[in-house]
Image 1 (cartoon, rainbow, N blue to C red):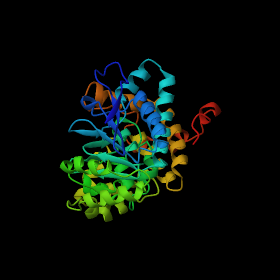
Image 2: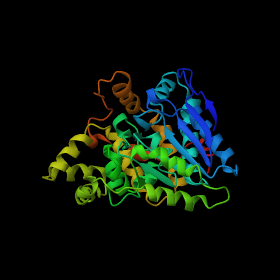
Image 3: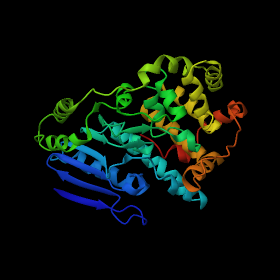
Image 4: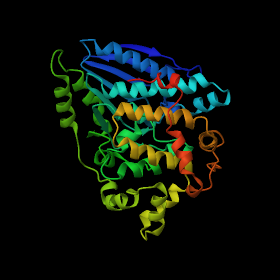
Length: 366
């Protein structure tokens, strides 16, 4: 086995991403376990570059990506780093991170070789972006999936509008607005994962993938191997609340979602309303519109829209108040720009979706 280490940040004592080849596998290890394998820009760039090399390497039949440690696949982007960039007015980084991250998401979705994401552990935000767009997504009993962005004043990006809008019924809208955390069975139910196995089986799974013969149909071989390791055991909760979710979140406006939650007598609706009111009102409103619009978009169109949203959101107060409350001071008591959803002007939401200046628009083409 050969390996290559990439140290992306000065605060990392070890390589933050490790590339290696093991038989037919091109292996990507996200290697920041103390930071729950959070992605930063050098990691994004390194992964993109290595995928391009492996795309034309005949000895690589399959790409496998996983996270180091026992806690996380990848808990998201390096939010603290982006917070610091905003504090020092680093406009270039705030533009480059999202632009290049979204390009990587799109590249993964269109990668010409089998791409297997082992979502063993916490998989959130940016971690979803480097997993859910792959052809094969494997969850385990340790998987904890969420798109929690509205809780820090952001929106479910990395193609969230695209993949959430394609979940069954209004499940994606529910997950995107509330940031609800789900486990393996619900990831399968929602279409966010393709296979489920036990953590203890991952080593043998990778061992079989490594033996795929050069020149064979990699997609067929990977499908067969993952099917053999797949286990359906485990019951989720989304199926049992699906009817309520569809009724409550299948609304024409985000205000109507709150109204339906408030008038429903169910415990689920009451708890969901309580959770939703802890999120940034403007972020919830933007996310609602994002997911609705993305239903009729390609992934590339959705990512273009999300880039516009990112460049607006990183310059608004709620994101940095949310990061302060959750990451910096950890008081978990953000003071949002709007007291509640009723204070959010629809014209303010619409402005997030306006085209950017031409030079920025031209920077993100797929």
